[in-house]
Length: 221
Image 1 (cartoon, rainbow, N blue to C red):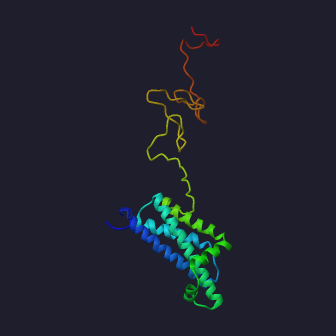
Image 2: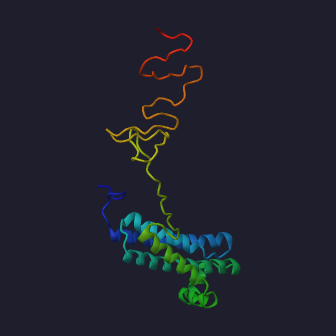
């Protein structure tokens, strides 16, 4: 059976390793973006969170709260590493000193701590990225809310009869149950004959039972 897809077996260790690799890639992309644009953008934390969550779910095939917390921690560490790396890249560009030289003369943990003291708002972006990773692992939706499906009433299939008393889609009259008289429509007798004859047709006069009428001018004798 393949290691990916709907029928793959859960593999927590492989998922965590994939999440760590995704965090490293995200931190490198954060530093590379800063090197190209010379801007530090905290919204990259959201992308790192989604990347870490996707890697864990894709490889590990596990969706639990514990794995979601693990993804959030990996995202926080990756965001801190990427943000600290962007500081070194920006300092290297401003001072024309290589990043390796700056790493040898300064402690990255001290640089990160001092940066958070002056830019505490960056922690908000870290938290957003961590929440995105946790939500993606547990629900598969990231920060986006899922839309509720619209309930569409089922249409009657071909050949089905509507319920008694309800008109059908073709607006045909509803037939009564078998054995019941058919109600006449407006303008017709119960037998179905029209009350008035059609234009141009003679009026049917019912016969009168009994002797024929006599004429006074011609008496019968």
